[in-house]
Image (cartoon, rainbow, N blue to C red):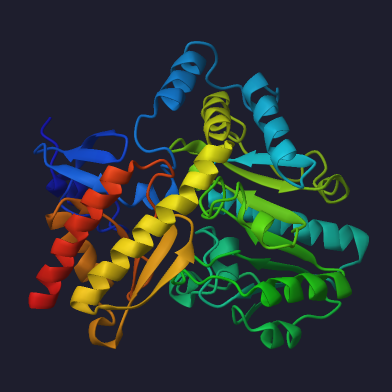
Length: 401
C-alpha cells in the first residue's frame, strides 16, 4: 500500500491537521521523511522524546522486555512496574505510584484522588478545584475542564462542576477563590501550552501556603516539565515547594506511552481497591522502557547538560533576534523554551513553524504567539548549531515575505 498524506483525510477522524511531512525513521535528534529529506528535531514529539529517536538503551529495554512479557492487566503486578515505581519514589517526595498511559489519564487520576480524599477526610462540601487560565491538563472531559482554555472544553455539553480558574502568577486571584471548600489547586510549575510562562518563586510559595491554610492539596502537573526537562529531575525540586500529588508522562517513556501519578501514603490510601483503574496502566513494556529512561536521565552530567544546552539555545535565539527583530523575549527554563513574537509578528507562530519545516527543522508552537522548542535532553551541540542555522533561514524567509 502506498501511504500518502491524502490517506489521512480518507481514513482518519479530522480532529488533527498534520503537515504533509510523513517521517519514517529517526536517529538521535535527526529525522528523515518519505522523500529522505532530513530534519533536525527541536520538537521532540512535544517534549516526549527526551533521549531523541531510537536511543540504544531504550531500544534494548524494549527488545528485551518484548521477548519476555507484554501484558498482564492489573489482576497481577509485574517486575518492570514495581522496579519503576520504586525508582520514582526514590527520586521524588512520593511514597506511592499509580500508572496510566498518558498525561491526561495521570491528571484524571490525580483529580479523582483529590476529590475522594476530600470527601473521606472532610466531607461533601470540600469539592472545589482551582486551576489557572491558559493551563492545559489533558483532553478527558474532567481534565480539559480543569484546564484553563475554554476553546478545548466548550461544545460537549454540561461540564464537570465546582471548578474555578485563577490567573497564573497572580496570588491575589487565587486568594479570592480559595476557601475551606477547596479540595485542590492544580498547576503546572511552568505553563507549557499556555505560552511557556515561568512561575514567580513567591507565587508558587504563596499557593503552597494557601493550600496549607485551607487544607487543600497542591497538585503539580509535571507532564511536560518532568524527567529532566527543566534541568532537575522534576521542576518542583528547584522551586522550594513540594506538592501533595505530582503527575508525570511525556518524557517518562521517551516515546513509549506511559503516565504516572505520584503521592504520599496518607493521600494514596483513599484510592481503595476498585475506586480507579486502567487496563494498560503499568504495562510491562512501557515500564521497562521508562525504567531505562530514568536510568539515563538520572545522571548529573545529563541534567547539567540541559542547562548548558539552554544557554546555547538562548544565545542563538538572541543572535537571530538581533538581526531580524521578531521576538519580544525568550521564555522558559532548561529545554522547555519559548520565543515570544513581538507585536509586529503576533499571531504568526504557525507561519514560522511551517517555514522552519521547509528548511529542515522541526519545532512547535505554544499558542499563536510563541514558538516552542522541546528537543532531546542530550541533543548534540552540533545539532543545536545546525538547527538554529536552519531556524534563522526560516525567520529570514518570513521577515522578507
